Image 1: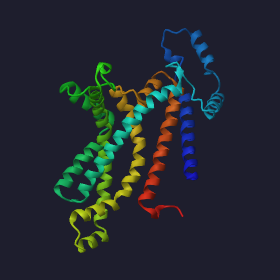
Image 2: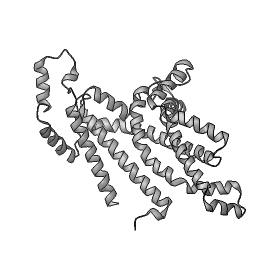
Image 3: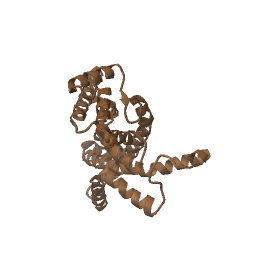
Image 4: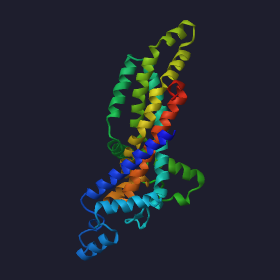
Length: 315
């Protein structure tokens, strides 16, 4: 456990340092992001005020010192602490990612197990082709297609936001339905590709499990086919559990673009706004948070694998 924590902390620190250096080397700064109507004197004053004219080493030392004290800095674009920006945006992103991961995991496991038990059949080949096409689609492109189809042409679902304009005037049931309607398209954009990913891994693992000797033994003992498939499915869970931790970075990356498309007020939306405004403290804090979530996801996946298969536990 101590080793996992040390490894996670190293990953987060390395990602945060790399993000800081790359942001400093990127063209432009908060002073240039103000536009063309700002005088050179005012730009110079802003750079001096925020210490932007110091060397990268000095800025890094100042940033690292503040970070070790738990101070994430001040958002120059939103004029409030970065911690306040994250506390507003993070719960919305975690909710969206949690729903997407749950739908992807359950849907992918069901589809993949169904395919693995029928490997080589026409239905399996047709489903594999459809999943491969879905797996190849970028989340932001899929999001745009869903907006055009279901929000523009069919007008079944809202295209942007987390709630409607009349949300405050609705009763509890109407508010719940309004939130669900706004959730459908962002959730579908993130989870459909995830279903394809989990299904491919579950199918291959299920196919390998069905070819094991214990399956033949179970059939020889007279177990029903459904019971045999259930035992094979339990044996095929390890690759899917591992994939759950790997999917977190993909979900974080996908959420950045999906939240932008649907104006979902989460971390992705805040990060893109901060990049456009050269609000580097928010960008750095977002990278740190994303790295921490990724490290935690990998650690939880390792723990889940050890619970599922005690043979993997360290002596």
